[in-house]
Structure formats: C-alpha cells, structure tokens
Image (cartoon, rainbow, N blue to C red; front, side, top):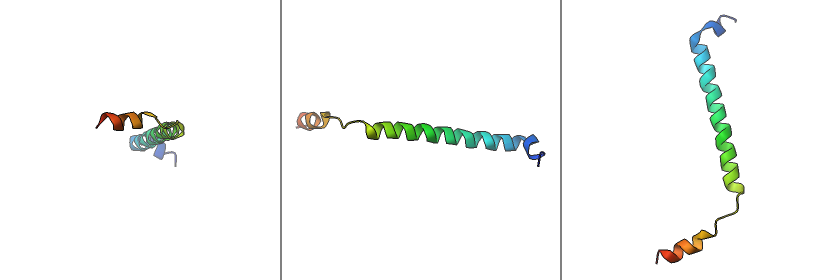
Length: 51
C-alpha cells in the first residue's frame, strides 16, 4: 500500500480532489451569503427606467 504514495499520479489525483473540495466550499459560502442577503430594492427603479 505504501507504493501508491510514491506514484506521482496519485499525488496529482489527491491534489485535484483537494482543489475541487476547496472550490466547492468557497462556492457554497458565496451562494449562502448571496441568498441570505436582503433583496435589492432597485428592481422597481430599473423597471421604471426601461420605459
């Protein structure tokens, strides 16, 4: 089993997997922040300016 960790391909796979987990965590935090923020009040003003 220790021979697996001497393979460069295994380290690349571990690194890519860790990168995907970090990106997923950051996206989750950003989406949660966006969804918890109050809705913008500019929608009424935008619809008036389009006319």
